[in-house]
Length: 136
Image 1 (cartoon, rainbow, N blue to C red):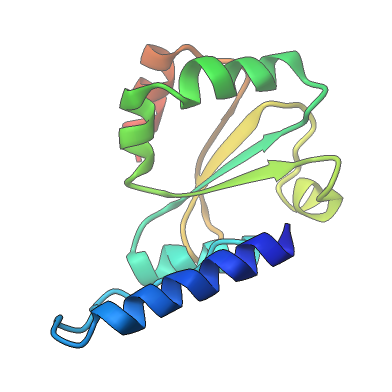
Image 2: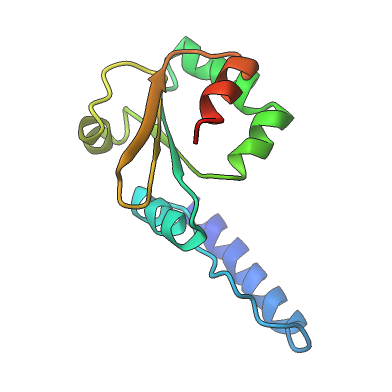
């Protein structure tokens, strides 16, 4: 997987270098969000809150919210206002503990300084989820 990401990055850099000679410089720095720390950096640079989603592959409601709610065009569009970071609680116990997650799915909206702006848990249908997310 790391090799695939590296290969794609090199291809993108090559395309950018070869096509950028007459274009204006990019004003917004790009951050590759491949870790929680980078998600926080991206949140600060883009001046967008961080949407943290805690879930697990074995969790039925987690799979339902990902498939039935998060994948809808309306939610995907709204996610554009956030830096989104998905946390597998079986792979990141430290982050789970840091945020006090005791059940999944659980989600937070935090600022780039890790101040929690809001949180909720459980399966939500699109309308209910968008209503909750609209507070942020």
